Image 1 (spheres, helix red, strand yellow):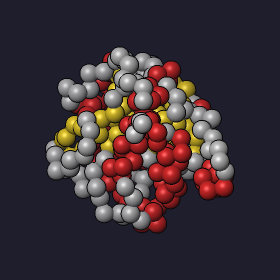
Image 2 (cartoon, one colour):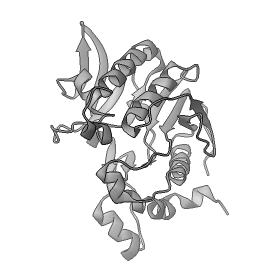
Image 3 (cartoon, one colour):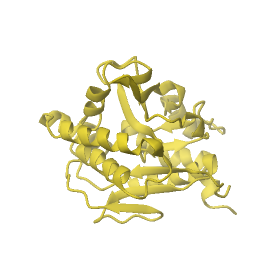
Image 4 (cartoon, helix red, strand yellow):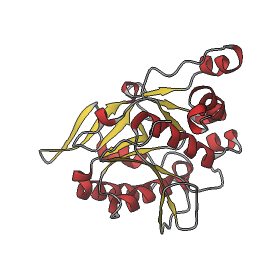
Length: 253
């Protein structure tokens, strides 16, 4: 297994257990989120050689590096915004940071996408739900601006209706603050404040074909993009895919 390489960069992933509220999470059923974090951590170490830190609440403990914050929100969508804000405000945010959701695996170095601008993913082909917040790049030089952005996002999130609080309140405030959404720099007051990156450039969704290969093929291909996303119920395949691609790295002979 490749050991950590010196780099002024960190990956963080948010996690706190919640009772499923959204239809997507209810359809998924039980899922080993702590195990997913460990798989993400192995993939990041192999691809980038940097640490993966869980950002969580003071009442949650997980194996491995973590930062605990006194959060107050108890709806998952708002909590994601709040714990991000807690990290951005904290002394721990002293290096460039990539935020990744726990249900991702990394297969390429993400440093080329770290610029001097806050970067978030969008999908132009889905205009009704264009923002993907599963991958974000937080340059430390933008700390003050990022804190302000997330403070406003959390305030906006608290005003959303019940349906969005169950699903979408973590992205709708970002959409409002960054609109109109087009790939490239977002300008406010004559200055760039963020960068919107087409998700297809860096992210690939786990496909039905990949799921079939897990049971019917001797060879399981790695993704063509740097990040593989196990969205919605396809999280069920995350462990099996990890074992066929990266599992040997976690438990070397």
